[in-house]
Image (tube, rainbow, N blue to C red; front, top):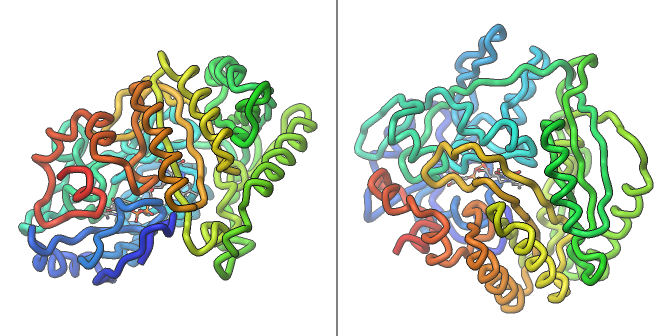
Length: 432
Ligand SMILES: Cc1cc2nc3c(=O)[nH]c(=O)nc-3n(C[C@H](O)[C@H](O)[C@H](O)COP(=O)(O)OP(=O)(O)OC[C@H]3O[C@@H](n4cnc5c(N)ncnc54)[C@H](O)[C@@H]3O)c2cc1C
């Protein structure tokens, strides 16, 4: 079994309950000596959803909607329901997810456990901000329904699956006037310009994010395109098509995404987009989920897999820090075709270990080339640490313990809420 980045592979004993009342039986067998872990659709890239040689509870068959109120937009569903499945019900009724990550193939349990963010973080905060209640099962047989204000709730949101198994989640959806977005793209020539454009756009647009070309340095360092969008006021409400249109059936050979390919990809993307003038209208699917149209796109990186590196830097250091990161990446020649820049808003995080904080986040993919990639990420770590930033645990699978502990100062308080019968490769690595 592997996570999305496919760098770390390990054997697991996997249980796949079909009904919620089977969970107790699986949890009873877990202890500090034989810890387990609940997982969803395994869209985390690194090791937060791995428990090598240990037990895994695959929650994806627990995907029933328990209640949905079309008047108030409150949905309660089992934790294995995917955001994609939820949208099939929400959208025709004129509702949408309060926020969504860049893939809809994420379960409600995974969305809560990583307190995921989307392109509208500056307007909506994280997914956890919409959660009204959830049911948490502990390995000592305890079961609790908890919500905002309860300390265990704030440990569970963003709690990486370590505080218990989330059986169901109740969240508040948001009204949308249509299933389309009025969007516009703005090309920028240098990374400094990103900050000015993003600062201006976030006042008038609910969704903003930028693609950045990490393969060029010098005067073109950090050139890119910022996309911004609001819901279109007059269209119809039509959900996405459920199946991806294309698939990558086999591992691509390792050379598929070499430096030249990456440079060409970014260059073409930039040139094409900057030629497009004015606004455009888009269904939510291609705008919010650009990669979901290709199933198993993670195989494009070849059999050794890839890392995703995501950091956030606070406003005071973001301008210089992001430029420094991009310089180091461009110099390394390991530039990523999928670099994303996005500003997080000032909302206080819901979870004790929630990743988002006010500032600018940069996310990049690196094909796994072994030592040289690890060295590059260690160099990036030093820049992030000097800028008082933090790394996203759901991403690279090798965050050094000192980076995690410095980035998440509440981690010591969090320990008190960890269920001793649950653990992950990530937790053993960073909390030792
Ligand atoms: C293409 C792509 C784009 C992405 N974009 C974003 C983005 O924009 N923003 C963002 O925040 N993230 C993003 N992610 C990361 C993804 O949203 C998170 O990793 C998410 O948590 C994955 O959910 P999952 O269902 O796959 O859970 P998994 O990866 O299987 O597990 C994630 C964590 O949740 C825990 N967990 C899962 N289910 C339960 C449960 N029922 N009870 C207790 N714990 C549970 C696991 O133990 C683990 O710690 C992206 C990932 C991909 C592949």
